[in-house]
Length: 205
Image (tube, rainbow, N blue to C red; front, side):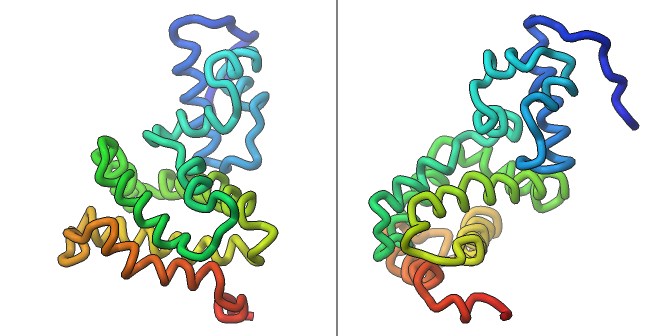
């Protein structure tokens, strides 16, 4: 059912932030990150666009708040790939992965993943998160050294999300009990291979 548009635009009040978040969630879930502008979110919420900047700063910040993920993965990915060093990147990623998933946000992260497995809207939002915050970060750090990054990132993502399900949801042993160093040794080289192998092995072309 279409939402009834409000007449005029409201100034800030205690409900404004929640209205902006509700509008952003609806639009991001329906159409994705890239096609939605701050001005359109403001129109949907019935507020002045300047209030979005007041409450959230940037579109990226609003996106992260709207999907309620407890942390932004982009800085973590950038740290792992800092300096553009590909060798050993998979192992470094595993160390970062364990630090995040075994940390204080585990319950929220698990709830997010479980929801995405049952609700297409959340899966759509998570895909946008992966494409916008993770793939774009890999492109920014490795773009001059690695080609076909979206393809490579997709395979890396399959490894990471598969590990999340195996280790934290299904709790399959011995994976569930492995430490960061063991995961770095066993899974890290596979991620490195995805980042470096000839592209013809990664595509159907």
